[in-house]
Length: 66
Image 1 (cartoon, rainbow, N blue to C red):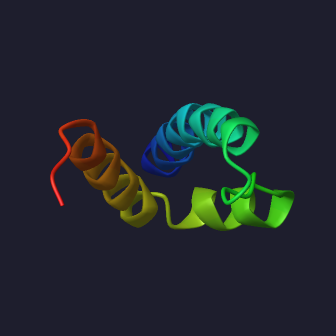
Image 2 (image 1 turned 30 degrees about the horizontal axis):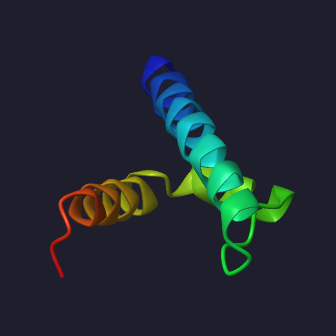
């Protein structure tokens, strides 16, 4: 039971951070669409995959690598 709660809490924490960044990016750029409720639910279920992809591309873009 605790592993399920840990999984959900870690996913919610990652979702909170990525949602804040996504919201800021959507305000600055019209090409970025903010998350809706369906996106958030899907993210909570499969959060390790999108979290790894997001942080990889985010860090890669910070250093200007193509």
